[in-house]
Length: 106
Image (tube, rainbow, N blue to C red; front, side, top):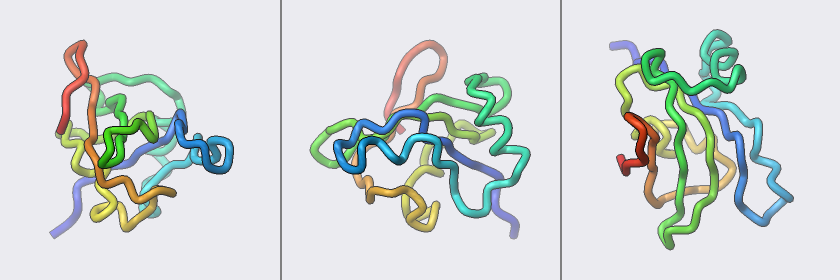
């Protein structure tokens, strides 16, 4: 059984730690070069499976904003359990994605 392709790119780090060093980090470690290149182009196109996302902690504090590639629109691919802890913070709160002109929680 093969895994569905996915990937993410942090475009903005709202944490105070390390002066926002998470910006421009791509993941997970198994991201393909093609997906990474698409994300680094910086264009969110739902038809191409690229969505804007926001990650919040369990206190509802915004940590990160970025782009994700998820052809099925499933933001659960951003959960640390599925990305092998690749994010620099262990974000256990909610994930919002921007699709159809509005933010929604996944």
